Length: 82
Image (cartoon, rainbow, N blue to C red; front, top):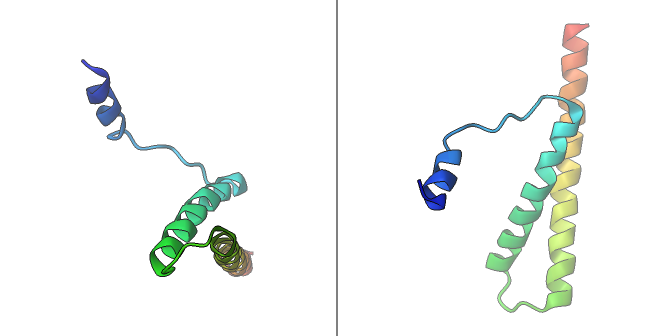
């Protein structure tokens, strides 16, 4: 088999992501990519300094909301199960 076939076959096996708190760190690269692409599609002219600041603010805002949502859901889960 050639390398392209092996690479495509590797996408058929699911990646195991554990359910420990460290697994939540997988959200940050995804949020960074979403922030960059979203701002790149919304800004008419990309000025690198303002683009970086706006992307960073969007990343921090979404990250903060996600962390707050995780904390609230964890608190509700703790209250229900204990």
